Length: 369
Image 1 (cartoon, rainbow, N blue to C red):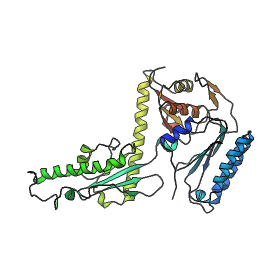
Image 2: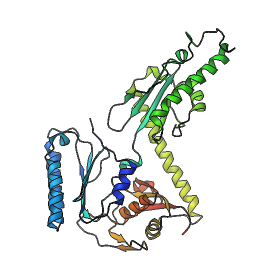
Image 3: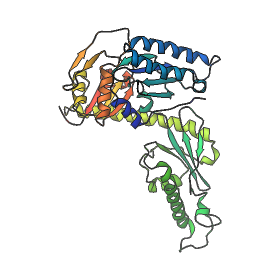
Image 4: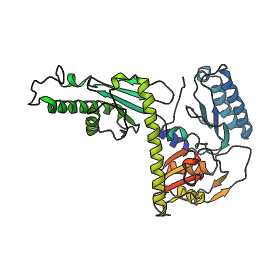
């Protein structure tokens, strides 16, 4: 079983805001299930030594070294890992994240943290809720990339449509406010769906996590007509969910999530093409760097794998390309992503084939430069 600590949007912003000498980033591919659990810790120890050699200030090196040694000595921490361990540490404090994405090993020492690879975990997190809804039951199931699907307790969730309507069954033709027959049943199911929607608000309010509906007709259409949650996906799981286990719901939900993410990328490609004709989209790295510096980038697509050595002027956004080195450093693409985040823009760390022209980055701008 994987153990994850995926950063929140606010944690990403905090890391992006951080600029100080001797900011260390370590990315370590890890094995959650291995015959030798010490292998992860040994590999991390080698990276710690690599980082230590790059810190020339003795006092800062000692403070950072103390924090990293404490982490190395934490046996419980190393017992529970995911696919990549990410550590950001400075003399003042340390952040650790265990993420389900498989990322390459890296060690950087700079005045800022290496963030671009970490953004992959937040771009398409493979997290969702499934509402399994039928006339006889309602349950909320949480889907994550690393743990088995599990039911989420929801206060005041209606147990079934008949009980919610205070009737022995929805087929009961006894009049209630003059509602009888199939039309009366439809009204009662709609009331039940509203009750489910109200109960979900305490769980879903303020989130942007996709909600996937697993329901037969006509309750599928009825719930969609009353739902107030903006992230309810159009695609759902058909049929009676009472016949499906939580894990079967999760397996079907992941296929829907894959299609949802693919559709998002396709929509962004289409928007990019449209905005480019208006002078509001570009793949030119120099233009993107300048736009990011002045807060003009609305959405940035950046290749998770491409490293572009160099720096960006803090005031003008001018690029100074650097030479290729054997030492990892936060480069131009990483700094562009950082500036877009700090200006409230959206950053998607994806693979090069999904970026227009397979460029290192592509930007949709708020307005033409």
